[in-house]
Amino acid sequence: MKRTIPLLITFIVGLIVISSEFIPHRPFSMINSTLENWYLSISGFAIVLGLLSLVQVNSSKVYHKAENWQYSLASLVSLVVIVIFGVLWGMEDQRGILGNGEAISAFIGKKPFDYLFDNGITPLSSTMFSLLAFFIASAAYRAFIIRSFESNLLMITAVIVILGRTSFGPMLTSWLPKSLSFLHLPNLTDFILTYPSSAAQRAILMSASLGIIGSSLRIIIGLERSYLGSDE
Amino acid sequence: MPNTESFFYMKTNRILYSIILLSLLNVCKMNAVHDTMVLDVPWDNGTALSIKIDYEPMWKHVILEKADSSGVFVPLSVFFEGQTEYIDSDVLANAKQIYRISAYTSDRKDSLIVVKGGVATEQWFYMGKLSMLILLVLICTAIMYFISLARRGKALFIRRINGLDSMDEAVGRATEKGKPILFIPGIGDLDDIQTIASLSILSHLAQRSAEYNTDIIVPCKYSMVMSAAREVVKEAYLKVGKPDAYKEQNIFYLTDDQFGYVAGIDGIMLREQPAANFFMGSFFAESLILAETGFSTGAIQTAGTAQAHQLPFFIVSCDYTLIGEELFAASAYLSNDPQQIGSLKGHDFGKVMLIVLTIAGVIFEILGLHGFKNFFTVG
Image (tube, rainbow over all chains, first blue to last red; front, side, top):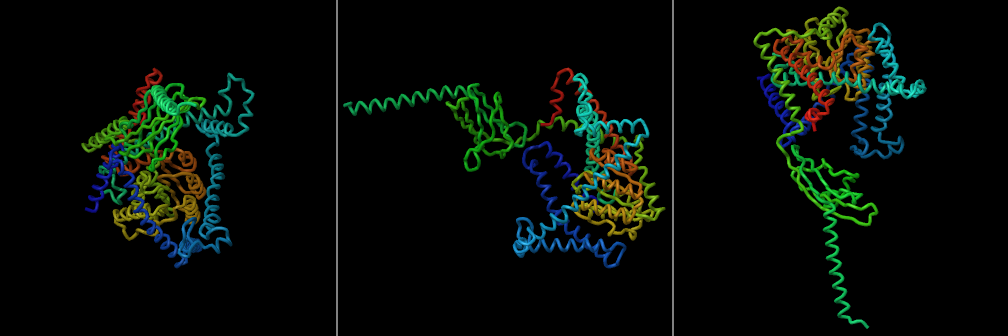
């Protein structure tokens, strides 16, 4: 029974959702948005679960003075501070239980929650994102080391695309006659991105779509059950 | 002194003549805009109307307006020269829509206004998706056929997928080193099929880690994913008969913020030094940050995603990468269930069909027959 009911629900809902893709008449046309709303409502409640997990895991580390417990303490303090600021003085246009905190806003320029968000979370996120530039450099170095014919090809293609996307690239091949304009670096870059690169990406997308169809069908007909926790 | 009576008589006559003349002129103008039709767009969900205007070239400026809920006409579009149709895709089903077409000559000395209405109704089938339905039915039939073949005991060949075969090796290495395994279910929520596929892989991995007494750490970006992952891992531990070894605190929620989540995982990688990292599911800009950090710790890394743009990053930084379809095939592949493996043969049929259709499409286009391409264009 523990397995049968979820499988039955999955089967019925799966069929309805597939039908709604091809039937534009109500109630089918409304089903997708209705189900999305249900999902949002449920995930709203699930946030409490996440919050509980966060507090439980980190407070346990702090309580038992586990290794690196200071990070957990920082997480808990950040969580409590931002929740208190949000509840007391609200965020953006929303009022908190103590109003808009005009006195504090006059002092720091914005609401405390927004101040922390703009000066704490946003710069930290940007820092993490900017790390990408360094990681791309190290990954590219490894990928472009010439070891085989394939890595040679990759290296040449990458150099063409990189040069073609900079202002230096057009300068390098600007002397080429019109009859050889296809060898002009920006044109060559466009060609690589429009044809071979797009073709490869579309092939991956098509095979992924087939995988999604197969996977969905296995789930709908109850052949694939491991997402329920057990395949029995 | 003019006779007052005859003056008024003449004035009235002039007004009458003017009205008759104006009416005649308007009839001529109406002929200049031959036909204006507001038609329901067929085979849709009743949210589009087609406004068709057949007008003489003398009207250089044709402006289309639509009455809002209070009856005030608001500009919708300006017809460019030669344009005869406008599709309004922002209408309510079964509600009358009023349109006003104002046409002007190039010198703006003459103008004409036509008001027309129409109702968009919902239909029972999207004709534009017929090709999609046919393809879906064919692929699903093929999958079902191969499942039934497998059910009847026919052995079906499936190529080896190194990334999946290496999972046991990765768990074994983690056991030898006494280090945990890190599993990242992507940054998609539970409504993402890639996340569902990753949870299926997690189930298999959790069973192996339970058998080898190795910890598995699963940081989650969404609470719903965390709840599902906890259930999956708990059941896996139960299945191998080690429910006591299950540690709920190892499957936890980190944050909804994309880069906050990445920072948290990077911290775990550097502090816990897991021996094996698994990145399975939906990934975006964070893919390379995660994979490169994992690479720097020396862990065996296996990634799988259907995000074509992230695959190169994983291929460069990970030991094994499941490309697109392989992520969805993983669960069936790992289950060793002949029926599930049979379903994978259905994918192969789909691939063959797509290749044939692509070649046919190229040939038809070269021959100048565009009907084939148009049939497969979903609209």
